Length: 251
Ligand code: 13P
Image 1 (cartoon, rainbow, N blue to C red):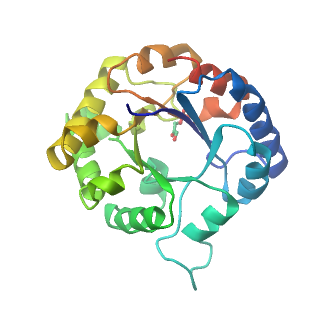
Image 2: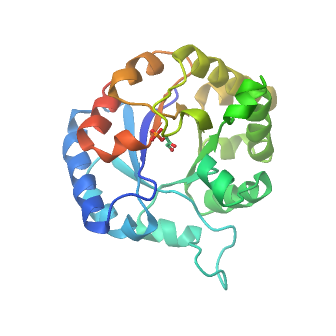
């Protein structure tokens, strides 16, 4: 049985002290969330160590939002995978659309980063998703299929055990415009088929696929009720502990 997960991507929000307070509130409320639902928060790099301390002893996992494409050395401004594990992370998000769009993240780089993260023992939350032009041109299945294949088809079935996929249609991120449950479900089912084609039905069935893009307490239930939607990658609503936990209670 694949795992249900609700992960909060804090993006570039909160100061360190605000982030620690938010993490403490999430950890305190996490006792309300059933054991079968995993919780993860992804604060900015500067917050990782104190947030790890704030989460200690709780069920809430810790994720980075990105990692470097090199192991160490002269790469000013970058953060390596072993720094993330040492800081207390169990996960890293990779390939978020904001990184693809604003920071030139390519599929080729994501292959390198994914390998490094997996070798370091991190689980990877790989984001895929089409933009508005691609959706309007009817290319959403093709775009998501290509993004999924480009990174995940380089992995083994064993490595796939450490992969979580997040489908985040770019037009739904931070816009208040959520994909309908039907729009999300058909892409999730497509991703699962792409996995089955390469790795077989078992790996496809065991892989957690999250939805992200204006997911909030008012729409999470309908989204999470879909057969192939295993939880959410939450942006704005993850910045309020009550809303984040409410979403995690929507299965
Ligand atoms: P919002 O929930 O703010 O739309 O952000 C979604 C997202 O990009 C999570 O990674």
